[in-house]
Length: 420
Ligand SMILES: Cc1ncc(COP(=O)(O)O)c(C=O)c1O
Image (tube, rainbow, N blue to C red):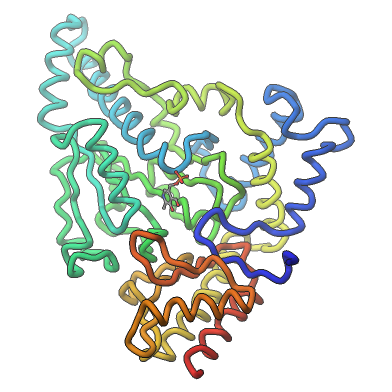
């Protein structure tokens, strides 16, 4: 089997451009004629630093990230960021309260300070989650695990407005946000359920007030595919393994004023968790993401993907966004053309451009129809279409490296299967 015979539409890891992989293979053996591969060079070498800093600069350029944001590269995976966001936000929030009390009260004793903070924490510290699919649900469960349910508020659970299943985003007016949430967490694109926010929620737009919550966005399956209103977020995170590179490195875009932390001794006295060093944003930033050994090969690969994107799309992410939309429209168009054969899972207004989830209902026996559909797809070289094991069905992942020609192939097969 040759690479060019396969259109891979798996949900992640995702395909990578072949020319990028060829460059990476060369760099693995002998990076720029140094006689050593990129994975062998020290992460503290000038070479590694150049790879890292160039990748960061290209990310900033491609996404137009404002200068009041810092880029961090970590090894946590998206799941590790479920933890990192909780630990760091709690620490930042308590530190802000601590500074406020110290500023107002001057030489307050540590005992009184901790007592005041404890009152604040108990009455006000709340992390709000907007649950729109499996990943935001997991993130909220992780927060409960780390902090306890008393600190976590699921402000909206989309299943409640969709017969117990994901596939909608509840009206913003129905969200039960805490009176003054420390954080509001959202997953921009739900990879398992094919649900994507059509635009940034109105209710979360910053007002410029001190009381605005920290808005956290999981962009694991949508990064580099659409323009992000970065200024609306405090933290944006994403694993690399879908649109950016390979598994092993995770990006964080964080507003610089969040790079503060509460002294661990105070957090311990308050019974709150202390951020593990390798998940600590402040320490990571201070060390330019090199606190410990960063997988520089992964960063190199992501850097090459960014270089290719910048060379392909003169208008940067807007160009990629237009292409992603065109590919998604082609697939949804083919599905909608045969309503007796296919049923798109999510509601039209929240359909993901990256993960197109549908059922095959032809003939009435969905199981048999989907097996036959997948078999036919494999015979045509279209693979990775099986839906997530938790929900079943079919999922076509339309990540950046899936070429227009691959999507055309699937659209043609959708039509062929429907008419057969
Ligand atoms: C939206 C989203 N968030 C988080 C994750 C978890 O990422 P990881 O497997 O890197 O922990 C995934 C994985 O597919 C995802 O799609």
